[in-house]
Length: 313
Image 1: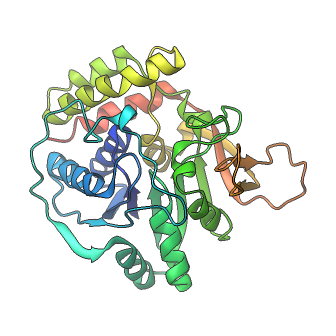
Image 2: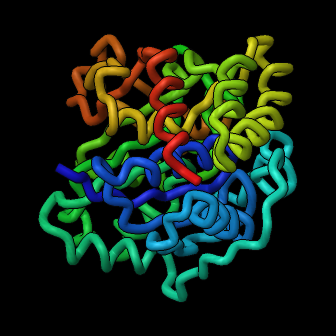
Image 3: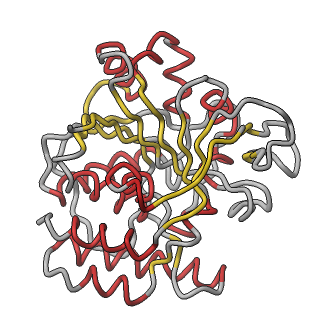
């Protein structure tokens, strides 16, 4: 059965591969829309990048909306040092042909969720959670349409990648993450503990380049650019390929393993702002609110990516 999803994203090279993976999998995933949020780069670029990816995939049936241009409380923090000035550096992108929808992304989310069957839509979040939290705050009744929120974000045993305690997506808008994690909705988290096991090594990038299609060439170019920062930062053979884990977990759940644990977001100013506080060993007695993945079959993950990306133009 095809699962209806909405992708909320701040593309980003790793977001790009996640979006392309979803768009290449219409038998399993009905991508209702892509909603852009400010994060890796500002909103004018993230919405443009989302439209570029729709163009590249040939899936121009999928509408793109622009959501929030800044976090709920904090000033916007971006990551051009990782993703380049455009957010998708590493490939020569034309101007997008896919139009941007006129409706605000948060209003679209509310409308789509209110119209859905109860629990009918899975939200796949690849960036800061601003749009999702704003929808839940503006119209709490829209929560009824959400079956699950599957997120890339946070970290526990790996710590943070932007501060010692916090991962980028959560740190950019910790208050939005707090709203989502306190919502009582079904949550699944793909944190750094998983994504740091999934490295875009030169051999894996070469496999994308050898696919023989425009998509494979674009992905190889983006990842070659993306690698330069994280290889130097972590001293590994490749950069962690974060965001496609969200989509891969829906397509092939047996690639991942984890457990239900209580997760809270630290929103107090200070060294641990944006930390995903995971009670991994059950010491607090709090009720578990999130399925947190901590293991991945990395070879199977990259195999899935290569096979699905080969389907695209």
